Length: 513
Image 1: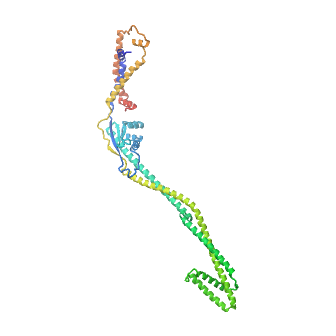
Image 2 (image 1 turned 180 degrees about the horizontal axis):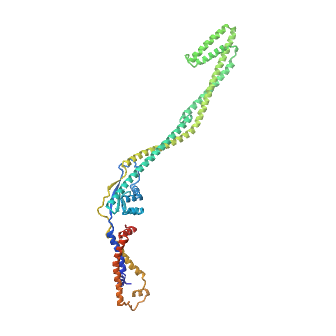
Image 3 (image 1 turned 90 degrees about the horizontal axis):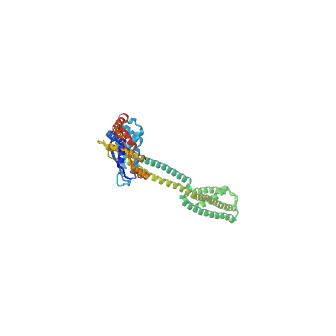
């Protein structure tokens, strides 16, 4: 079907008044808003994220977060609800801000603030930069707000880095203190264990084994000597065949025993030994007493000889008994010491296991303590670097200046948008009526719908008066639109709500404010 331009032109003229209503209404909104919207100003500040002043190869930095992560954290802390509302109230960012709801102030501040970053982890060869912009109603206000943003960014960056360095330092100080206490406890436990098991410590095991061999040899030797002495004593009793006197007085017995003891001592000690000298004096006194007694006695020579032999036998037996007693005492002490040595040797294995456990725990804690001390020194150095601002830092390379030329609104764009919306609605109205109207209005529609070809068509015949009325209505409607629409806009702007406010709210709802 060919396009019937004449028909559609007639439809356009018939609907022109309503279409002009849409065009004039929204074009009027756009034009009024374009000229009445208040001027806005915008300014920005640029910040540079600098690398540490001291190379990381020389000292491990206390803050390991990358530039992008730090800037994300700082941005989130900057754009908090409390910060934005506080800045808006301090600098009176919006008109009638005291009557605005806090949520609306917060949303408006976020919408007017723009934060952009460039560089970072993806572009390692480029410096990381941050640009903070703000748009408002006054040049001085936007400059004050951006400078306040910059101050908060610098404060948050310093607080962020210093707090992390201080937290790291505090953690390692506590860790070193805790490990030091554990080391002291392990030292005390090892010292107590060594004190309680001083005779069975594993480090003395070679000495105990050598001592055990020595004592075993000594015990065997003493036992052999004891057997020999006992046999000698038995031989004394069996080998003596002379008469034995049993009538010795006490002084003679002491003299015989003393002489036998002197013979034994002189075989071992020097003549100048105090014991030998003392024993000789006792023997001299006893000999004098016995000699005096013999001068007054009535015993014959044979009895004296028998007495002397008996005394010698007793002295020999007494010496053998004494030697046996000494050997038995030595055997007993050696046996006791040997049993104790064996006990200590058997206990040394268990003590070695327990002591190795204690020492292993001590070595583990010592290793952790050494690592913690090393980390503590690094943390102290890192905290010092952050306190003196020698680490990563944010520098302001361009402060926000007071703008001299308004940045908005784009009045031409606002007016063009109003006209565009009006024209679009008018065209949409025309197309919508054509789509919804299903009546037959042309011969071509008869052919298309019923597949018939009419012989002739008789148009609607208007009378002259009807035509005049119709055209009068069209002209009246057009004049009404041209006159009433501006009057309606004036009335709304004057008595209801300024048109620029209506436009601002509309743009804000669609995200174009």
